[in-house]
Length: 313
Image 1 (cartoon, rainbow, N blue to C red):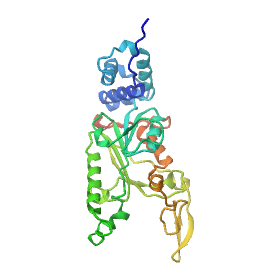
Image 2: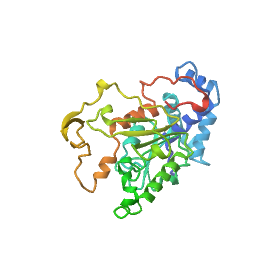
Image 3: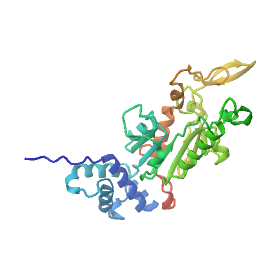
Image 4: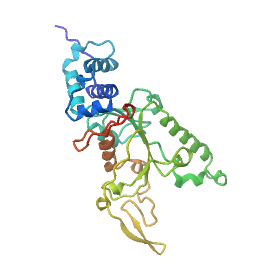
C-alpha cells in the first residue's frame, strides 16, 4: 500500500481564522450571548461554512475529509476561547518574547525581523512590509528606536552633521517606516517605542508604561500608540517595584536596578548591549497578551459596542 503524505494543516492558524470569521459575522450582543453561554454561534449563522472557508484559505483545493480530526480540534479551540483567537503579527521582534506570550494563550502569533529569532517559533526573517497584507487580525510592532528616540534627536541638528552624517535622513526614514506600519491593513494595532519623534511628528502616544509597574526592577518609559485596542491596565501603585534612592549632583533621585546614578542604562558595553536593551520585559509582554489577546479566565466580556469595534478580548 502506498501512503501519501498530506500537506500539514496549521491547526492554530485555522482556529484563529475561524474565530475571526465568527467575530466578523456576529453582532456584539450575539457574541456576548455566546460568550456568556446563553447561545451558540450556530444559532445566528452557519459556522460550518465559516470553518470550511477558513480551512480553504489556508489549504486551497484540499479535501476537508482528509483533515477531519485537525479541523475538529481547531473548532473546539475556537469555541472554548469564546472565538477570541487571532492571527497576530509581532513586528520587529527577534527575541520572541511577545510572540511566545501570545502563542502560550492559544493565538497564531508570528514574529518578524531582519534577524533570525532567538527562540523557536513562527518567525519571518525579512522586511515586515512584505507580509503586512497577509490577513493578520492584530499587530504589535516594535520599530527600532535608534533614530526615533527623543534622547537622540540632538544628533540630527545641522551643527552635528560632521559627527553624525545623514542622521536627519535616517530619522526621517525611520519615521516613514512607522507610517508604513500604521497604514497596514490590520484592524488592531499597537506600536511600542520610547518617548520619541512618533509623538510629535505623527500623534501622541495613547499611554506610557514602565516595567517597574509590571514586576520588574527596571525603568524604561515605554510609549504605546494604539488603534482599536484598549489601554494596558496598570497595576495599583502598591504593587510596583519600588526604586532605590541615590544621590546625584547633590540631590536624592529615584533609580531602579537597570539605571546608573545619572539615570542612564547601566548595561555593560558590548556587541549585544542593544539587543538586551531592546527586549520587551516579560511582565509587559504578558500584560499585552492578556489584555489584547484576552482568552485568560480572568477576562470579563467587553461592553456592547458597534460590531465594527468588537474587541478581541
